[in-house]
Image (cartoon, rainbow, N blue to C red; front, side):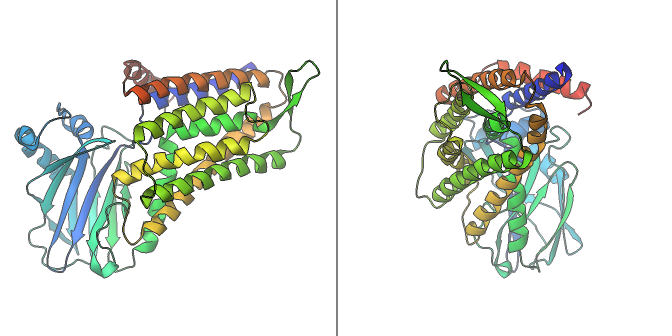
Length: 406
């Protein structure tokens, strides 16, 4: 029994360690944009200063201008040329870089390295891409290929719908431009929604706060206190937690859509702070009920702010264009699938532990831990500070994961 509880808390600690060394809603991604016209093709590579520093060992800082960057441009452009190789209809093309630009976003400062593809004088039918940016330094990094313009596919002024997603284990892919791209884009948005759930550890911790009491029911005692009684049936409890997760999806789908269509627009600092606070309140409800038996209300209410958190990330990349409706649908489907998989992974283990005398302690101490994480995160986001503790915890996480072979 002690071994099971130890494993549970060990997995929870690993989640905490991962959370503190990662930025919620800030996936490590780089972008390759292609704009395909009838008689020429051009594009842009976008990378954050953080990723460029990691890749090349530089010290680029916020506040630098393009002129400050010029001494480093040859090395940066050479890295991009070596790590991104393009073929169109079987012919290789070299990227000819032109004047770059910088822009700031919540994810950091981005370098936009614009390029042309000399010699490509007609729109290709097939583009083969070998994308190997940063995978040797960051195995979790992802590369997004976005077709910004391709009239024959009905793509005009697209800035946010990826056609291909590259990872460490999937660096070579082909894009068939003769085929309709809507279905491909939809599938990739589903994948992107799932990915955002798995790297958005604030969402995972919020779900965990809802999951902990899902296998027990709170019963009042004559002395005014309460006790946790284990549920008897697996499926009723499973469907109950899935219904709560669905309320969460409904809520964040609403605000994601409203933000994407620019109906509402709140400061990301406020949104991220409230998301951090939502974890604490959901966990506090496990210790002292503040919402009665209406856990669905927690999921619905705070899901609205989690949706704005999703929108802040997608908005940075310009989620707009003809396919925005399909993009939102695909992204929300991906988020729901990601949440269901998390429930499927955790719920059986919690159900197995529910009748143990120590399970109420798991709920209590697990909730206290979530509250501590939430307060830590809330202070960081509200006051826009970075604690040095993150660096030490990040190094500890890497050592632990290396030790256990992950």
